[in-house]
Length: 284
Image (tube, rainbow, N blue to C red; front, top):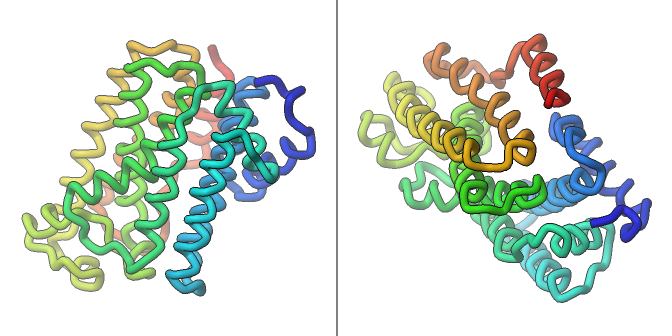
């Protein structure tokens, strides 16, 4: 994809969406050359838009579903060659340049729809795995293609790293999700550790850390699988994926060291470690 095929105003608009989201993603993707960075910003902007639909608690479910269905139609249109705004125009150019798959965009919308309705509480493991695939691994499948490696090993990275990152997010955000009536910890692990399968009961259970530890073990196994698969990928193309793993896996260690005690404050890396990771973005 050449920047020449895109209106600079479209590039500026998707870039602003990412920058204004106050996320490390904006700076992290600067490791990429401009055309790939623009593609990733377009993917992020798309995810931001559909996530905002799902997370708006003031909108009735019927309206959320209608809005998400509109995005499914817009995805189908852009893969048919029709784009109507900055995001879809960037995605259209990116899909052509990097052979992105329509099914992955639709999967992301489907994942957001899972979050749009009644709060998810103690999902069975197969449902949790489907959710992780849609909201995280589908993004990974798009990302590795933009990074420059669409091979089988890169697809395995997307599969495993997406799940590892999402499970880490779930563990980090247990308290925050509970405030919205959500509990993403799997039913089987809660029952197996005698933790109530309702939000308040789980949050106040002395056995909650044991259930969280089982999720952490699963996440750690996915990190290992992703790192092993990266060894069979194009090294340069996997730089962003390696940094994602390097910035998230320590959060898992911190949560385990804290024995999954939730005080309402989100766990994050110390500032000096963030600076070290940021510096590594620009190393070969």
